[in-house]
Length: 527
Image (cartoon, rainbow, N blue to C red):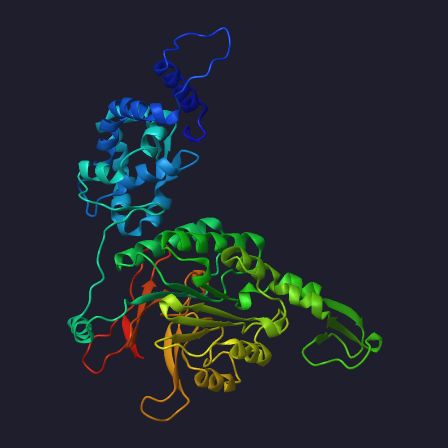
């Protein structure tokens, strides 16, 4: 383990341990020495530092000309953690999007110039300009980089004080979330109140590959930390985690969710997942239909449970097999949360209670009647809702109740929730927010149950698509996500957008404030 999988380093550690124990030649028989890796690593680290520290500092400090700096240091950090010992500069650029100009500067012959200016680097690193990859073949160099004190190394190489996250690496730059004077005044007026809670709302991820998920997490993590977010209290993904419900896509989505959990101190219980229409396995749904003569079917054919090819020939679905179209989603749910997701429709209403955060989140499956033949049949199973509402405890003081599902309440598309009666039940049960996606554009609306000042109402928060292919973007609506900052008397919905697949997240200033005023990248919901 100490050798990091390198046979050469293992030999080196054993050699130094034997030397410290006074064993300098082959023994006639096996002897035991009371030395282990911990006893010799420090000495080896100092020995390797004398050889590698100076050229590595030169490499880290080379991007001194273009602002922002940090590409060289980031590449060394990635190399230290690469099992294969190489890193693509283009992928590194995606991982650290706010250093894009520095990586572009490197790729414009300047990394080649770095090797020309410091010839000692040629024996340690190899840059393939054609493929844009940087390779490290020396196992001792990798051992050295793995043991580097990165904050100290960053400061010595002229980058100032930079914090390093265990999973995400250097945080470029550390920018605190700005607050408006009005926000400052509100905080002072309220005095000591419970700390703000942060809920991340994502929708329509449409992940296809593990690389896509890793890059998406890196870009998201960078943006959250620039907003001063180091931990999350809850994560809600309102459907369409994947694109075609394949095993590889669900593996990518699982990787992304695990990275968020690890990077932002999020426990499994605080992750809320609901399926969307793309999370349904159409392959499993198709295999559940049986072709037969209408005359061979016993009993009456229920509309919506069969496909008519001719007046005599139909395909009839077998209900138990048909429910298996949610099995891939259920496997991901179990892997991420450590608890099963039921395949019975009347049980597909999950309650996530987070009393320490003052949150209770109800997850509903609005895609439970959808397949390839009925793609627009969105609805809420009333038996599932009734079961969940009966299980809800009494509303606690200060508790915020949130419901989430995939499909919209209002939309020009056919794929929407047409029966809105269930909203009345949610309002009566004390729910305050609805979170959904599907439409690939952010939106905000409200449902009023009581037509009185301060009466019961549901604010509807819509997230745009977090990762759909460009061809599926709505005109004028880029990639998007929501960060909900929940305070005692208000909920601030921070909206973020990304206009380029390879770009960085930025404020999504689209919420109008009145004539002559600039739109803002946030809106406030009074509690």
